[in-house]
Length: 328
Image (cartoon, rainbow, N blue to C red; front, top):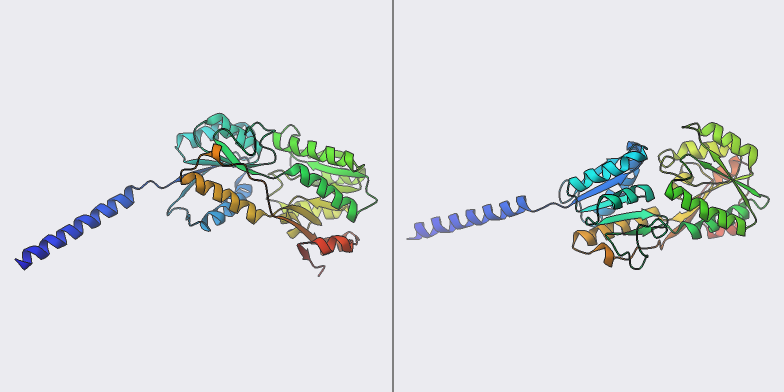
C-alpha cells in the first residue's frame, strides 16, 4: 500500500514538473524592435546603453527579452522597409532614436507601441501633445530648443568676442531632426545677437568642412547627427585643430577631447526610456504615457582642450560644472 502511494506521489510530482517546464518554455518572451538610421558602430552605442538600462530593470537579452535591430546604414530611404520588417516580426514594441526612424515606424504601424527619443515629437507630427500623445507613440523629448539657447549662452561666456558661430552639418538640412535643431539654434542666436553660418560636409570629408568653417567663423556650435556620434574623437580633434571654441550637446564628445558640453544626462535618459518600455511590456498603452522631458542635465568642461587652444575658462563656468576634466 505504501509502495503504491509512493509511486502515485512520484508520478504526480513528475507530471507537475513537466507541466511547469512546458509552461515556462512556451511562455512568450517579449520582443523589442530597434530601428536606427546609422551603421553598426553608431547602433552599437545606442544598443549598449539600452541593454544596460533594461538590465537595471531585470531584462536580460536572450533570457527574458529579445532585441531585434534593423539599421539603415545611413540609407534613410531604407527606413520604411526596415520598419515594415519589424512589424512583420510581430515585435511587442518598437524603439527609435531621432525623428526619421520614428516617422518610418509611425507609417508602418498604428497598433504596435512605439517609444521614441526625439527633439520635438509634437512638431514632427509623432504625437498630439506631450501630455496626451494620443496614438501608439510615446517617449522622451530632448527639449533641444531650450538647450540651444543655453549652449549658445555658454559659448558667449567662454568666448565673449565671438560673433559668428559655425555649424558643421554632415546630413541634409532637410532631415526633420536636423531641421528642428537648426530652427531652434537660429532663434536662439538671433536673440543673443549672434550670426550662424552652416558648412555642409561633402561625403565624409570632415577635414575640408572644418577648415572652411575656421575661415568663416570664430566659434563652433555642434549639432551632432547620428553619423557623428560614433566618431567623437575625430570630431573633437578637428574642432581643436581649428582653434575655435566649441560647445557640444553631450559629454561623449568632451570625454573624447572636446571643449565643453551642456545636455541631458545620457545614462538617465536611457533609464527613463527603458522604464517606458517596461510599462508597455507590462500592459500600459502609449496614449496613456506622457512624453517625458529630461530632468537631469550636466555641464562638462575639458580644461585640457581649453589649454590646447589657449582659452581660459571663466571661474563662473567652472563653479557651475558638474564635471571638470583636468588639463593634465
